[in-house]
Length: 148
Image 1 (cartoon, rainbow, N blue to C red):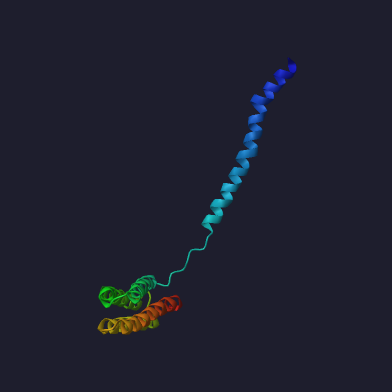
Image 2 (cartoon, rainbow, N blue to C red):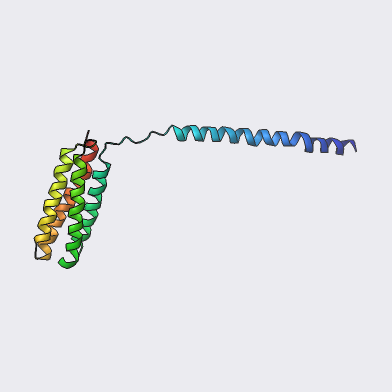
């Protein structure tokens, strides 16, 4: 009987304390380490050219769709949209927080090539200028991280 009583005493009083110490303390330490490491993550530094990059990427994707088109009729609306997005990219490259002349020039070249693609009457000529507009849009993306 004495053994059963001592077992019940250990089971009811000591065992929960051991479980709490074995589970809660390590859990608390792990969560503390997680939250301190999560708050110590370095935040990316912005150059102010994020919108120029965004519009250049959109222009690239639109020019790429136009380049992959099988007819000029399908490509023309895409080219117009790409030219508009490249124009936006050049405008955002000029704002004071970005002030990136290279990105502006590349974006304006994309606009020029996009307009030349719009004037083409044959598919191969249109694709040639659309490809150049794509390349210029990519150049905007490579130029913006080096600004300011």
